[in-house]
Structures are given as structure tokens and as C-alpha cells.
Image (cartoon, rainbow, N blue to C red; front, side, top):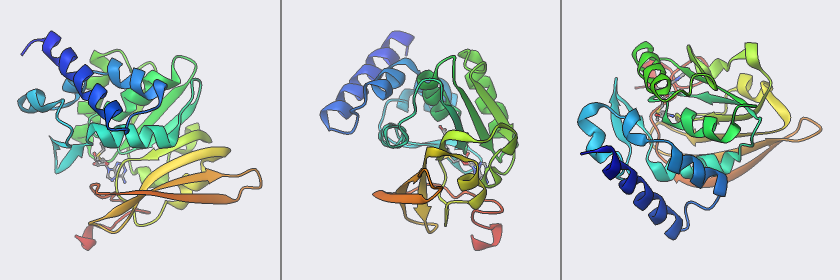
Length: 224
Ligand code: SAM
């Protein structure tokens, strides 16, 4: 399949997500039109890149479905110039979407615990020249990344039993955090706002299913 076909499939998928009422925000539509998802999936899954499903990326992990990327990015509502932290880099696709939106005046830090996926994401992001706006870190993202804190926005793309305390601390006052919170099998998307007095406001959105956040403030290995 050639590049032209991928571009057509990308436009068709995005049109469908708009028609279904899932994709509404212009910034997110523009970013999803710009980022080639086929560059973030293993070669044997490239022809499925524009199916609206998660796909395996190895090591028991997945790239999230496009509708979930749309929903989470819209819930996070990143702005140009924002400093964003993503926990769970995976393929690097979500980081690229965020990088498109924050632009050259913003930056995305993204943390991944599986070393091989750090390399996979770096090579995908590097090939498409996103590494000037994205820093990929190897580590336990449940601890956040304090050297670049505080962040305007934080997105967790793995299931967590609770929002890790260090991430709440590393969020700016007025900042937003989006995370799938729940047990190992089912979560609910939670949108957190840190208000001016430092108070945490929570909104509960749709049910969802993510691979687990495994770490100090996530799930423990022996829970599986
Ligand atoms: N955002 C990714 C993308 O665009 O491809 C998909 C994320 S995938 C659903 C969840 C990722 O979180 C996996 O790659 C997994 O290895 C990673 N992960 C799990 N626990 C983690 C932790 N404590 N710190 C950082 N990454 C973690």
C-alpha cells in the first residue's frame, strides 16, 4: 500500500469520527490529520493503522484506538505553548498528537517503563522530526518527571487504581490531568482540574479499558 492510500484512509477515519460526534475540537482534528498513525505501528500492522481499534506494539502493550486518542486529547484540551507530561509513551503516537498542538513554543515530556518501547517511540518520533518538541524518558511514570515540573497538562495513557500523588503535585495550579482510573479490567476516564486554591476537582467521563500502569503508584507486578 502506498502513502497516498494511507492519507486517504486517515482522512476517511477522521471524517467518520467527526460524523459520529466523537471528534469536535479543531486543534485535535488538525493534529490527527497531520500525524501518520501508520508510522507508529509495527510493519505487520500498517494496513490496519486506520481501523478504529487499539493495535499491538509488542511487549504486551498497545497503541490506543484513534477514537480514544481523540477523546483523551479533547478532554485534556492542550494549548499552543503548553508544557505537557504524558505517562505511557508506547509507540509515541499520542506524544506526536500533543506535539502538533503545543507547537514550537511548547514541549512534551513522555515517560515509558519498557526500554524497547522507548527506543521504538524515539525512532518513530525522530523519523517524523518530532524530537525537537518531544523528550522521551525511560522510567516509572507513576513518579512523574520532576526535572521539568510543573506541567500545564498531564495525560496518563495506562490504567491506574488512583491518580498518582506525585502527578497531582507536578500539575500547575489551573492545570488539567486526564487518566483512566479503575481496576485492572475496567476504568473510567477521570478529568482533574487543579483549582486556584490548590483544590482538586474531578469529573468522571466514559468507561474505558487500558493496559495497566505498573509502578510505585500504579499496579504492582504481583496483582496480575
Ligand atoms: N500513548 C501510547 C501510544 O500513543 O502509543 C499508548 C500507551 S499504552 C496503552 C500504555 C503504555 O504505558 C505502555 O507502553 C506501557 O508499557 C506503559 N506503562 C505502564 N506502566 C508504566 C509506568 N509506570 N511508567 C511509564 N510507562 C508505563
